[in-house]
Length: 397
Image 1 (cartoon, rainbow, N blue to C red):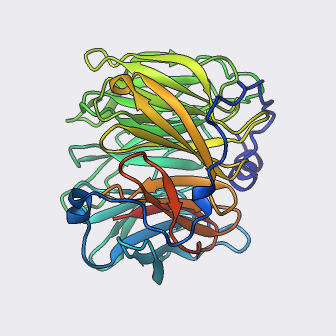
Image 2: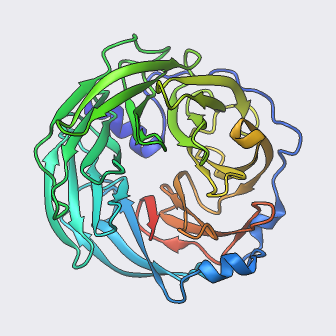
């Protein structure tokens, strides 16, 4: 896919030539909640959650587009108060181009960023002194997602523009070695309105046995086995969504037997059954995002650590959908949607304790924060949005 196509996706969220399919009507209970507009009101928290909260400010890292008009200068550095959710800025890691997605090494000493450009790359940053440790080519165009394998030895990345996934070794210092594998999604053929494969995410299953790649262009989730000695991927299964669904982001339930898929083009979500033994994923029926007719470009799903609630960012609707997770992960029940307090929420993340939810709003150049109620998963705004140029990823540590 040429640079014009993927840049349009970046800044407008539209898919080149994609036609939005008809969506399901909103479920009962899908009305907006006025609680989202209650600024500075803490959600109820149990003593156990209070005990888990850090006592001082915690780091917040913000990814951006440096090549966009009014964009950032690199990875923005900030801190947040774990009690109030208030964010304060404190600098930038410069010389990192278009770091639109961020991931942390399991030892918490190294940060990794994609460089979402035509000549795609991934960059390592040492957190202790914010030193850039170097970059490596992903072998593809416009990498938009990356994750660290639980072993801490491999970095996995997804090239949206060229529809491929890459593997890089991580040395003990956190630096990246030369790419050990590159797999292009050559089949099945592109879905309706698509011009080719568009790998949008790559993630390791909770059991650590498989790597799954979500491809919006081919309406497919690919399952691979990672050879942890050679750093190579071997395909073992494929799961197809309905044609034109445009799958974007997959999130596993903590139990490891179910996952939830956000479909960007047809504005739906689906519960998926996962078999750890074989790596096979079975995509369930399409469900409503609660945003009404049309498409709202669903972006990312989150599940709470206790597996009771899930949240979905809706970019077109500028909202967050809340679901109750039922049947040990087998069902999603739509509860409500709340205004995100910004424009085009590209990515969402929970704080380590699960008490705060952060939304990176690309078009309003802000990060909004919500208190998360333990008893019902309700979201309440935590003060005013934090200004951050073309914010597309917020990573609370």
